[in-house]
Amino acid sequence: MAADRKRVAGPESSVAPLVEYPIDYQSWTPFTEKRHDSHRQPEDLRPIYLKTGLISEANGSAYIELEKTKLTCGVYGPRPVKRAGQGFSDKGTLNCEIKFATFSCVKRRGTMRDAQEKELSQILSQGLTPAVRLELFPKSNVDIYITVLESDGWGSCIAAAFTVASVALAHAGIEMLDLVAGCSASYIPTSIPSSSTSESTSASSEGTGAGSITPQIFMDADLEEEKFQQGSIVLAYMPSLNQTTHVLQTGKAEGAIISQSVEHCVEACNKIFAVMNHALLESIDQK
Amino acid sequence: MATPAFTFTPSTFQKLHPAEFFRRFTTEGVRPDGRLLDAFRPTTVHHGVISTANGSAMVRIGGTTVVCGVKAEVAEPKLDAPDQGYLVPNVELSPMCSSKFRPGPPSEQAQAVSEAINRVLKESKVLDLKDLCIEEGKAVWVLYVDAVCVAYDGNIFDAALAAIMAALNNVRIRKPTYQEGTIKVSGGSTATDENSFTLKLARTPLSATFAIFDTTLTILADPNVTEETISDGQISIALDETGQLCGVTKIGAASCSQSAMKDCVQSAKKRTQQLRNIMNQQ
Image 1 (cartoon, rainbow over the protein chains, first blue to last red):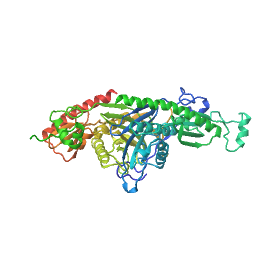
Image 2: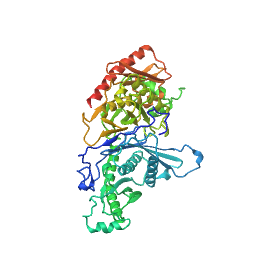
Image 3: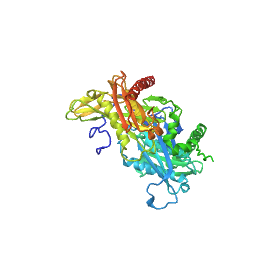
Image 4: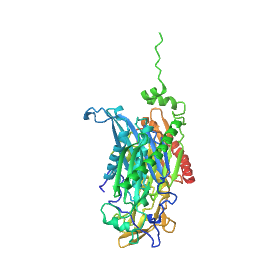
């Protein structure tokens, strides 16, 4: 970690202590046929709390909470582009910046933006740009700043970022073709791989590309569940137009599973769309 | 012939002559947002809001919201203080909370507020750093106290200091064991008084900030962002629970009389007592 002369300095380097679990400690595994939160079914999303208008200085703002995932978003714009010498552009630009607070993850994060955050910012821009009517504000820029206060699951964080950014953009009065809802799903094996399992296991394990066990699709997985995932998918979707703006798939899964998870995500995005509309209608009542 | 009169709507007048617009209110003893000159905005404090942090709190003073999280890590102590840990407070003013702040390294204001709070915590010896020792000369706790401003509407100093003190009160760290150069803590079961410890704070300084207007000799309590911009200077007074001064920070080029200073200290005593009640209630 480079010495940051502009902040109150701590020691040059520090580490988190090693966590030792007692011998009889039972941590959650997917092989118990239940989710980490036992009240949820595999297709259930976490309840969403969405509110607008928390940042008075911003043109638009929103706050989202999915139990332990908390994000705030502030939107500024359209404002004139600083460097006018870059030439005339007849379309506006969207600039997304996401930052994880140092205390938001189990391991403390650095204060400077790292490569992961820069990549996420790019992903967000790519997912939101198709929905915004950029041609209405030439030579201008819209800045979207997101701070993750607490993170419980990487996929749910990205999905929540799409959702909260769309609501904040709508709250700012920026014209859009549609709201963008984000949803994540994980492929988690729920049966213990052993020789006593059916022959299909041994047959498919010789094949390439196919997983030895058919993983189950868990919607909106949290941090504990993600530790066991074989792969995951994050979908950014425009519900009214029935168009996907961004897909982020990692890990391995069969084609059939991926198509199925995309369908589940689309269904979930429609539910999230209702929550987003409700939050925006509430904000109009407040005004 | 009568000269034509210039009339503006209030919002236009505010943009063209902000200082004059403001003066029209203060001469009547109120402010544009309806508060009296010595009134503080409604304040709320929430404890333990971030589960990934060792301690956390969220403070809202009017439109200013600050979330503070404390993370504890292990490091080697300094050579000249082998039994003392580290307390590292920092205030983040990101471009999300206001358009005044640009993306990039901390602005001057953020650096100034961080340094001022660091001074209050260190000089008034809020925490005995020897309590953070694990193994003398080998391993000590580092408490990274990061206050993130989520929404900015003036008076960041009060909100940040209150959030930091509430978060420090909320800290719970697992008891460590030192084994051949590695620090281990127990995981799993919920944190209890047996397997974890809280911090013993010698005192809890809380502050009250006032904006000073040179020309009109007015002092306003708890300035919001518009009042901050047009003020000539600000003074922040930090007091602990016994009413002793823990730090006075004055920024800007304003001057104020001795009697005005005394009034500020009296007002700060009342305000910090009120803040303490709010903090202890929740």
